[in-house]
Length: 445
Image (cartoon, rainbow, N blue to C red; front, side):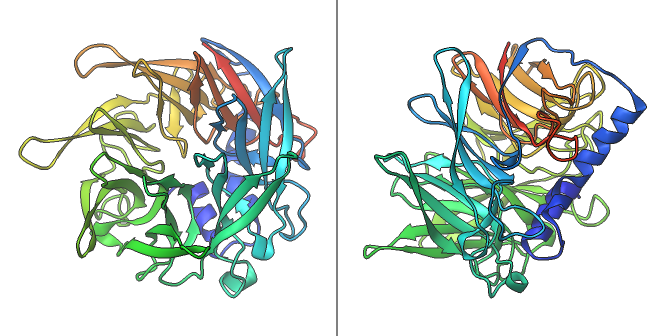
């Protein structure tokens, strides 16, 4: 099981004392590599500009990014800020980065989480509605009767005002029972304005849920559980959110379950939920075996010309993770194929993590790996369609682990030929005992 992902779920369920445990593996692995002195510089096909290095009070451990129509960037930080309701940590922030005419960017903290009923530890990318409101989730906080007073997480909304301030509203607080616990994925809207996502725990069987939030006519939101995972062949610990196809079916992944492989706990699944008159019916499209197909899918797949394309964190031909494709067959069922197997080492990435994939207008895929590259501090990569079923991989940037950041664990977003993303740590080495509190970066290929 992925230790960092498992730690995040355990924190949400009150089984770890400190949120800092979420990045212990990441910090330790890069610290060991630094001491061994394996590589000192960053090899890169492109150049990096650090748009912002976090210092703690403005945030710590940034997650995925989203652009607004004006070209401003928005995202959450999993901790940091000034909220004191999450001892011994701070509770996280939502930030905005605005471009300046001289090429620099200015950061503004839009919201500082206080913990308690207000929520704590936002842990997934944000989304916009057509009116410009932001939506996201927190791993803890909300209903304090859950999780020994720490709360089981919330779904929140941020509404901008004409004066530049933002007002936060809690749309739903998880109770930790059948409704789920520990939301961990990017929200998505349907065409009617309902919200969908997953929780890593809770549900009827305690193995996580897919849920829906529906706005009420008189105000407020109603939660309904579309599927409670049963573990075993069904999968458990869903992560990364869900995506819609044109027919209204939902697709997602579970980090574990599906088979008896990977030490008996299962290597993860890709599933589909189809709506019907009697509710939603789940079909497991693929059960990972931990061999050439890989193991531990943590990010939801994307839809590309009717196929599902996604990443797995480990396994594959070289043991460093893969990009996979699932294509529907004409007579039913789905055909699985490895698009790319990461080689690791100094010339390739290792361990695509929670960010998954994004695309540009030419059909290229972009993503990040937690490790690998010239200094083994992580990479930004691009997959380009060559011919037939062949794809070519290019490492656009290898992180050195210093002021340029290390541990890119979330999405890479392409815009006008440039690629944007975040690293969990690195950057300002005066923060976090010399490890850094993370950066927002721009890569020019």
